[in-house]
Length: 593
Image (cartoon, rainbow, N blue to C red; front, side, top):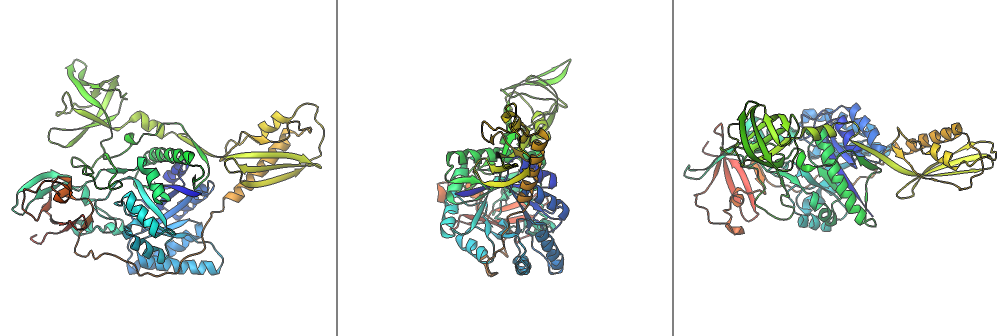
């Protein structure tokens, strides 16, 4: 049976705990430095607290140490790695091979002292898109490899077939970088901020103009490199069958409401798949979740969704009009009024609205324009200020649903418990209570208590069940106590309560210990990589294809003369190179600049 892992981002301790409560099997979080998101750092104490919380459910905590490191920073990195080992994190993600070598040196020391150590995972920043690269990272000591976002389900299956002993982690939801991860140098070139050191300036989310070789402006001021967000919730089963074991949600800068909603949606879908295939799959952590809201991916931050290359190359994967969230479609403007009550409009559709909702639309200039609803009366909306470009027939989108946000921000938006079965018995002046996982009958622990048995005058069954199943305030739940129906002895409620507390203390002691790996492959830092020195980006996304001018895939012959160039608003220019043999578009410095 294969364990399936839903993996979520943790901006901070609060978000990490919320992700676990809402159903993930693992979270990934950045330490104070050296993660791929410089703005999402966390203290060792907070990560330790997260580990303790996660390990109750057999959930895991992964820490990103996946930036390139300068020589003078290595003593600080070594100290960080040792601290992460001490607090019991389950895995560390790496990009820099020298940092990986340092980590294995620490692991060897700990192994000699019989101390557990985290696993090593190869970050997607190491550009893992071929079986050869996956094998190389495994040979370098990484038990898991995070694959490039650009791979299709078929390509993932091929890698798994060639590398069956390597855990494969795949992205399933969230923001997409237009360049292969680890191979983008545009931010550093333009703004001195290295994406490989967690300081990306998001050049791909900026406006560009497209020029041909004769300086003709083919497209002016559009978000030509901004991609829609990834959503593979309907491809989860295909990815599972392809051999992936971990399904990763992107977004270590996202807030807690985003994480709760997306986690809930994907966790429910994974559970549906497992329910249909109970003999093949199970979840990697323990517990069931009761949600007090209905998850909706359309209601959370997104730039429109795409399956990217999961099912092969498709045209509609970019977001030319805006790099911002449009949200869910809520209807079209029916009519606009301006009377004594002020400016308002009706919406034709079935959506309900609340005061404070954020709406947006594409204005006549082709740009995203947003506004806030000051007052909602059914489908009649009174904006704080009526947008000039709004007119009858305009499609409307909601990128801030106040009512839904309030549901997500409640403390009890979800409750996660571990269902257990209890076995109660009494013999020879000893009472005994055992706990088993409800789903698998796995024995957790047994406790006993000496007590002089006396025959009861009235039936005791119902009171025993009621007292032993009082598990509120803990992570456990139980609605079943297995015992003799004609149990003959009187047991005071205070004694049953004592026995219950003793059981819970022992379960906690058993489950607080993280399951860590102590065996590591021998380190070999030789690994394949591409020569990328003269590229600023390497992209599977192709503008020529996206615009319908790829003759290799049935598009029409271009009307322009190449080479094409991209120009930022500040005048910075980049050359485009189309590598049709490998179906790849490269961004290069423009030599004439």
